[in-house]
Structures are given as structure tokens and as C-alpha cells.
Length: 194
Image (cartoon, rainbow, N blue to C red; front, side, top):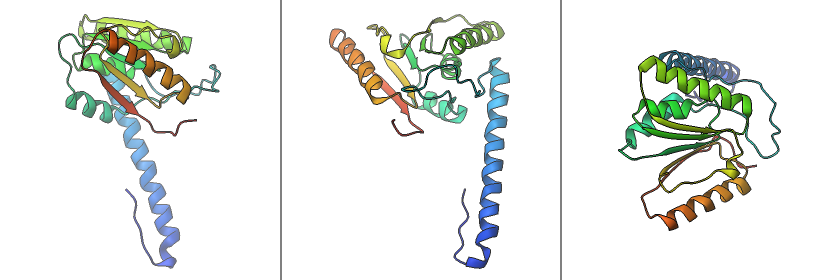
């Protein structure tokens, strides 16, 4: 929310009020994220880890839970769906997909420490709710992803460098040529391509 006023005498107060509103909105979003993490029995908060060379990688930034709720409500999972998250981070999107009844999830995360956190988060979620679903986590660069003919829902948050993104899309296109099926792409880009 932004408040505007044409009166120049109030501009300083309006700017301060807008900053205060932004800070409160950030606080509310962080509180929602924390509550959702606790509910799902996972930990997906952002971190300051700079261990991965970032020349063509986007830094870790988890997707908003409200966006994921909307996405998985608008595009519900069906029997046989296989959901793939490229740049899966700590697994927030994958766990939410499983929470919305996707029985087959796949994640690619190049950062080994995040890939381990992702694996732990999925196990913690499964143990808390006694769920059993298929999952595969690959601690590799998404460019090396193997696209199987059962994969049909692909998630990209803050997509990669355009070169990497195009490489992945070409692999998906080849898979569709081998096995015709409806395929969905979910792209959430908060930052411009580098």
C-alpha cells in the first residue's frame, strides 16, 4: 500500500508513513512465513550463505506462501502429476506441493547445504503428517536435470540466467516430443534476468 499526497509540506511525513507501512507489511509476511514453516514442520527462512558462486545463479529467496496457496488452488494436482522445482532451495515449494496432495515431487538444487536442508525438510514434513509420497532431490545444477516423460508441472522462481533457462526449456521440449502430454510452466520472476 502507498499513500500519495500532492501537498509538498506533507511529503516528508508521507514518505515516513509509507516506509512504516512497508516495514509492517514485511513483518506480517515474515510472521506468516514463520507460522507456515512451523505448521509444516520445516525451516525455509532466507539466509546469508554466499557459498555458491553466483555469476549465473540467483541467491536463495523462498517463494511467498500466499502465492503458493493461490497457485496450488488454481492448478490442483491430479493423479499422475509430477511436479518439478528448479532451484528448489530449502524445499518450501516442494513441501507445499506435497501438502496440496502432489504424490510425486522432484527438486534440483545446486547448493549442497541447501539440498541437505531440503531433504531434511521433506522428511520432517512426511514424519509429522505420516504421509508417503514419491520424491527425488538432486544436488546438481539444473542444466544437468534429466527430464522424464512423466514430469508435467515445472516451477521456476527467480529463473536462472537466460542461457540456463533456455537449456532447461529445450530439454522439456524434447521430452514433450517423445511423450505428448499437457505440461504446465509456473514462472515467478521477482528479479530481472541477468
